[in-house]
Amino acid sequence: MPSTGTLLTASELVAAYSSGELSPVEATKASLDVIEQHDKEFNAFTLVDPEVALDQARASEERWREGNPIGWLDGVPASIKDMFLTQGWPTLRGSVCIDRDQPWEVDSPVTARMRENGLVLLGKTTTPELGWKGVTDNPLDGITRNPWNPALTPGGSSGGSAVAVATGMSELSVGTDGGGSVRIPASFCGIVGFKPTAGRVPLFPASPFGALAHAGPMARSVDDVALLLDVLATTDHRDPSALAPPIGTYREAVRRDVRGLRAAFSPALGYIDVDPEVAQAVVSTVAALTEAGLSVEEADPGFADPVEAFDVLWSTGAAKWLDSFPAGSEERIDQGLRRVWEQGRTYSASDYLDAQATRAALGIHMGEFHLRYDVLITPTMPIQPFEAGHDVPPGSGLESWPQWTRFTYPFNMTQQPAITVPAGFTSQGLPVGLQIVGPRHSDDLVLAVAKLVEEIRPWATDRPAGSPR
Image 1: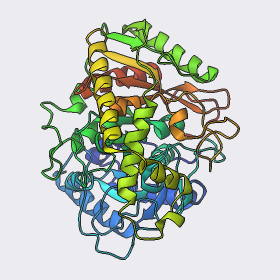
Image 2: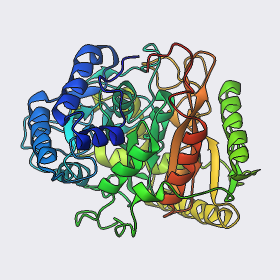
Image 3: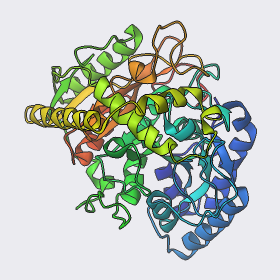
Image 4: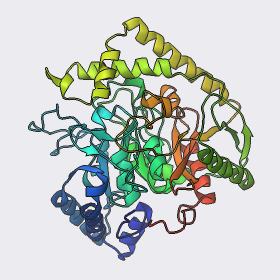
């Protein structure tokens, strides 16, 4: 797997800028070099703009020289998933049905906050069409591949962002997560991916996937995720569901001492078949957490798989969006997405409201569960990465992506914060992720527990022998 020319996290980059050991221009050129050398193999980016990136880097370099950086991440090379509106760049969302030749004059809240804080925007990362599934391929860009083994999928739908961060093409990225789309690829690519509480990161335009839709930071360390969340977690008048600004900062909250807190460990949520090597890596990390002082008890939250309600909410959202597409789009879109479109059209308003009621009941159930436990720990994924170019593992007999992402989408329905952090590797050298879920609005707590996991399973020492990063 290729690596960045700096081999530094975003936090380390900023420290190097401050000391004068490194400049934003040097870091940006290093990222652009890695993209140039390796992205043809991995297909993480749908758009790269070196001229704009270097202009931003030079402006940042001048600010650092004068001692006036405009944010904690000023000058850090970053990317954004091609689901976020970006002034001056098209937002095609992986679709050949969206007209590239139109004015692109608006920044989403995510893009605007990153610009305002001085991050260097390298470009936009690949997504399945409309971010509809748990892998990353689309009719516009083709197949995105896992940096640990290019024959395998990186997961999705924020697969391009995960690959960009894992390879060092981009120090940071922001993805969307409607059913696991930040956490799935972060787990498969061995990075940190955080889905904050719904509304913590404002969205505009409003997602047709409604209450399921979140946006979240992706990075190679928990500290970097916290720093990026500080940038993103501000209000925006265009999102009426956005939360009030946090009282403190996440960069400080991540250092909270969580030893002694109560954690439930659910190895299978009571109904999921888990790959033995994945299970072993997670169990080993949970045992290490116990030794580190977290009070861990094995306990399932006690709900049944909510996939039927999730499918209603997901497919009706997709159908609403696709109904606005030009005539003839049925033949041009991802044909799996077409089936979701057709499925969504079959549901009534009553079906949708029933699914919303199920979602609300699940949220209440988890709220009661967290009266007993501060956090819930699970595997992030029940399986290892599988062959790229397939929506489900070949030969599995599965029919849809939610059938192999059963640890993630329930917590979109409940709108809880959930993070994945690296927990080890399989015998084939593939990353395994551990998921930490907290009560709504406990983003700071989830980050602090994730930081403890990172300390006991350090990325730098927990890689397989000979791994290139």
